[in-house]
Length: 309
Image (tube, rainbow, N blue to C red; front, top):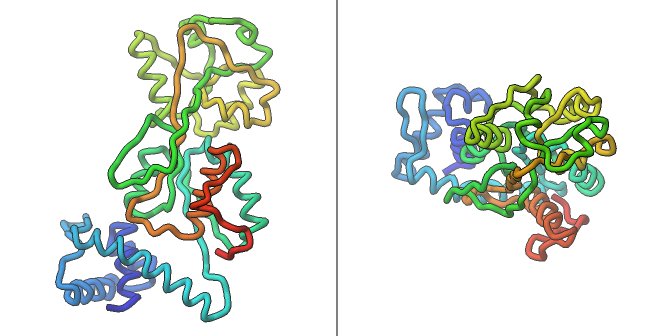
């Protein structure tokens, strides 16, 4: 068994395509197929089921993923020690847009000061797309806001409830009122995130259950742009409260008091149960859990800033 075979195998499991894996690794597709065929013969098992262009892992293939990842991680660390250099460190995060804007500036500032060799890659998408990427090893960690999510393939690091609120400019006539009827609120012009998972979907479902509907003036994924429009008193929006509180416009915004209306979503952080926890992943987990405990980090994931990644 050769390391290059294991690297090729893991790349295929990441992209679920022999042709795409070959392209990314600089092999011909036939050369990559020969590597995997040789690996299967040596192990005496079938690693992939191939039906046309669709590639899925067999149970032995799933077990090899679990065992191969820590092996290659340790090899990379050993090569760094032998060459008297810190091993290359990378962290692939999957996040929804609102969490990225609210939480990432602090992480980037910390990493730039203490771990300058760490390479961060952030994928912004909906929770369902990001969790699918987690299942296919395209991201290391997924940080989303949604209803409570569960799967035996994932480890949930934490879950924290967040308020989802209607927000207006402080210049809006609604800003100073209490217990505003929901029917009156949704008649206003609205700037909303696009229809997808999480809070926008939950709002549409809640309104439909009350035989109501909201026709927004504009739909866009950029919450910063939305709040810019709201603070100009051009309309209302419906967003996580942490987005409002972290906005540069927070002093010009007002969370509305809406009669008989409460909505919550849950901030959740996941990694795959078969994923080898790299130092970079432990760093993010430590910071995230520390945030959950008001800056007090769990000892079991404590990382010294002096320890190289």
